Amino acid sequence: MVDPQRERVFVMRIALIAHDSRKELMAQFCTAYVRILSENELVATGVTGKIVHDATGLPVRCLYPGRRGGSEQIAAMIGCGEVDMLLFFRDPVAAKPGEPNDVTLLRLCDMHTIPVATNIATAEVLIHGLERGDLAWIELQRGRK
Image: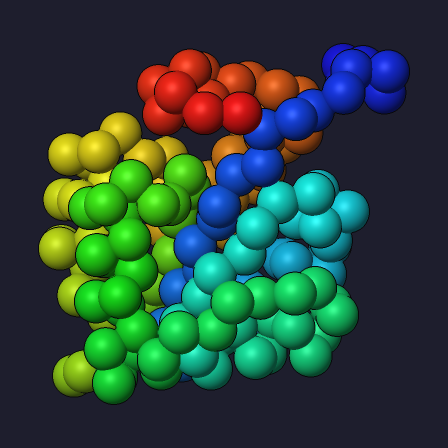
């Protein structure tokens, strides 16, 4: 159960990436969880970020589009410890050439202990964990408040 009196100081930087066929699903997810997401910092590949911002009104730091290096920018941020969670809605069947490289992003998340969701089911588990404070260990691991 969420304690509404508990003051959450730690702001997570959540990266958003979605393959073309999953961008609308990402917008719907962010709309459903706008309250939780509004308490954190969002960064996204260009088109995904614009779609999420337009759907929710949330501020989103938009990087380059995925095909122009946006996923590589997020990968670099993960490597530098600048991302706390990755929501990567991918289409394992219809991924197109030039879309974000799944293996590289997932490997970096594993190397740097970044929680990652690759579909809406795991994204909901992470977002509810974030809401309950289950991910407070990230604050300790990163050594910041």
